[in-house]
Amino acid sequence: MSTGYQVIARKWRPQIFADVVGQDHVVRTLKNAIARNRIAHAYLFVGPRGTGKTSTARIFAKALNCTDGPNADFDPNDPAVLSIADGTHLDVIEIDGASNNGVEQVRDLRETARYSPAQGKFKVYIIDEVHMLSTAAFNALLKTLEEPPPHVKFVFATTEVQKVLPTILSRCQRFDLKPIPAALIIERLKKIAVEEKIKISEPALACIARMADGGMRDAQSIFDQMISFCGAEIAEPDVLDVYGLVGAEKIAELAATLATGDHARLVAIVDECDAAGRDLVRLLTDLQELVRSALLDAIAKGGRSDALGGLPMTTEQITRLLDGLREGEGSVKLGLAEKINFEVTLLKAIEASRARAIDSLIKELAALAEESPAPAAALVAGDDSEKKKG
Image (cartoon, rainbow, N blue to C red; front, side, top):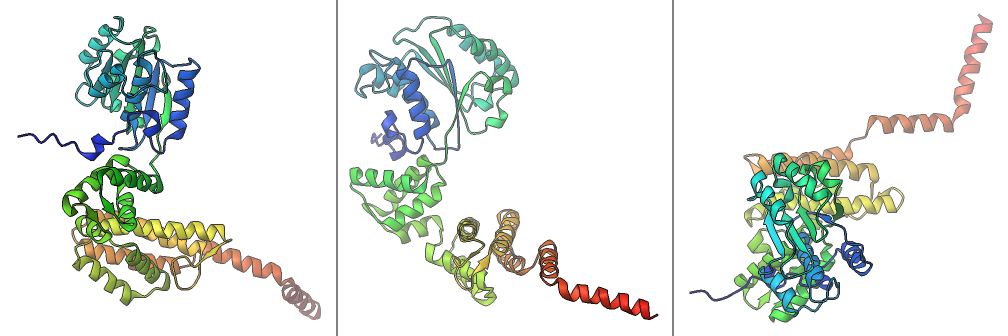
C-alpha cells in the first residue's frame, strides 16, 4: 500500500524563481527578459547534474503561462501554475531527450508546434538531456528552431553541451549553471531541517555538502538517506560511517604528513582509514582539494604557505605535490590493489614535492652569476695577463 511519501529532493524542488539557489545570474536574466518583453524563442541551460536546469526551465514555463502572464512574480497557487507543476498543463510539454531521440519524435513535435496553445499564451517545449538527440533528430529540429511560430518557446537542458550540434547552439540563448557553493547548500539544508524537524550538526552538514560536489539534488538525496538511517538527529560520525568519508581533522593530519615527509605516520593513517572502511578514492579527492587551498594560499602570500602544517612550502613544492596526487588518480580508482596504489601515490607525491625542476635550478644559478660579476671579471683578466706573459 502506498504511503504517499515524497522524497526531499522532490518535495523541496524550487517552485518559483526565489527558490533557485546559486544561479542568480540566470534568474536575473530570465526575469529581466520577461519584464522587458524580450523573451527569446530558444534557451539552452548547461551545467552539472542537480544544479537546477530542469527546475529553472519549469519555473520559466510557469512565468510564461501563468494567469495574466508573462509574469516573473507569479502566484505559486495560481491554477495554471499548479497544473504546470503537476505536469498536466496542455501547453507545457516536457520531453526526455534520452528516450525520445529519434527523428520521428522530432517530426511529431514539429507538427504539433504549429497549433495554437490550448490553455496558456505559449507552447513551451522542455527537452531534457538534449545532447542525446540523434544527428537526424537535430537536423529535423533546425528549421523549426530557427523560425518557430510566435507562440512556441523551446527550453533545452544538457549536462554535455559539447555533444550538441553547433547549428543548434547558435540558435539558442545559452545559460551556464554553476556548481552550487557548499555554503549555499548548507544554508538550504538548514532550512529544510527546520521545516522537517530534524536536528543536524554543522560538521554533518559540511560533510553532506562536500559529498554533493555542487549538486543541490545530490545533497538533498544524501540528507534524505541520513534521516532514514539516523532518525531525527544526525551527527558527523553518522555521515562518515554511512558514506565511508574521512573527517576533516584526519584529512588535515594526512596533508601534514605529506608536507613534512613523515612516511611512517602516513602509512599508519592510511592503515587506520582502510581498517575503518573509508573510501580512499574520495579521500584522495578531499586531499587534493586541501592541497589546492594551500597552493592558492601560497600564491596569495607571495610564494610560500604553511597551510598544510609543518615547515612552509613554496609554490613550486605545493604544485608538484598536487601534480603527484593527480597523477595517481587513475591507479587508485581503477587499480586492483586500491590501498597499495593509494599509498604509492602519496609517497610519490612527497618525493615529487622535494624534487627540484632543472629549469628553476638553471635560473637560480644564472641569478647568482649575475649578482657576483666581479670574480668572473677577475678570472677573465687573469687569463688575459697569462696570455701576455706567454
